Length: 242
Length: 320
Image (spheres, rainbow over the protein chains, first blue to last red):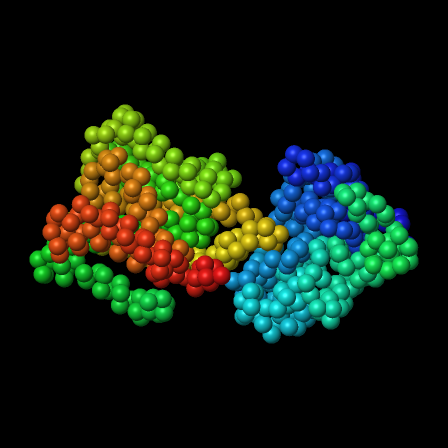
């Protein structure tokens, strides 16, 4: 266990408020270490997506610190955070429907200064051969699973060190979910750290080394994924098993 | 039309025909048409300019004509200070760009209707400032502009000279629009229009790119304003009222937001229609031109909400 490895990403007592009253996060602290796959599970409204948005710079925390590789992310816009090597594949995929597959990928590399991106394209088409076949097709004409792959490919174009995925399995057929999780594993083997938000807790816990359970804006449990999978309370609340 | 414009040959032929037009009009003794065509050309440049803000970035701007005014007045003031005319044009473009960037920096945090209202307010403020800043602009009396006769070797008629200059301006605006549209920057604007959050997460500096589109618009307005001032040899605040801003917006919307060919057609119809009515019917008909504008816009909204010649991408955006 890499207990001593320094945290790549850490959240320290992060609070978030929507409007004036709705407290989405009430002091979340967590860590992701280099090379890990960490899962974040929890029910609807637990604050998972809010947390991802804060890390990516889309929302400002009300209080608390987010640090990535030792740098405080406070006040940085998303494109600056991305340039540091932190990419988010958003919930619902959000590919650009009227840009072609190639153009979608090109947008993902927007923060990079290199002119020649052929290696990045090759890498994405190697991971997702189906995208290679559809490179001139408009994003909106792809199937749900292909769109999820495109969204992941787009994020990989920035060559992230930490890839965050928000509900990658949402609305996809089980066989496609298998494929997506297989590729998440591949990406991790290539050295990319992964932070995974899922409602599909079973899948997430199988893919991850460690996991956090978020409940109503707070970290309820932080454990090894394997231990969590066996935890009776977690099995009952999140896996639908007794 | 789009395919036609897409091919180099057709483009060259259209350009040659447009360049031959004033000589043809003179041959059939309708020199008035050259003036009309020149004004249409100015509004084509303005429309292509606003197209950056409205068509590419999707930002509503109801005060665009103020930048035409800033271009025109900068030219008038520079000419008064005995700056050579070509330099005055460059100066007009530069100052208009700078003013637009300043405005954009302050107001681009607003969205949609709010942005429209604030730009409308800016348009009125700009006109009122010009109207009251007597020391610089000579107020409501307007400013004379020292005559400049370019292209005298081609034609002695200033209308023809300026028509040709404006045609060059339109061509420049078309080429610039096409280049930017098909570049990475142009695709980034599409991405921002499609999904701003996803664009931000893709690493596109959304604020900066909106500001870029908003600012670039002004280069065209500045150029058109400068040509207008030099051609008319006279500028007054009356030329830059709110209605003119609405006209430019209508040109872009009628033609098709984000579509270069559409904007050209929109200007041709909306600016060409009143003189055409005057010419074919009677002078009195000109009084009903707003009625016809209204009718055209209502019909267009009902039957062609995507514009007469929509860009392929925009068309699919509006149909879904």
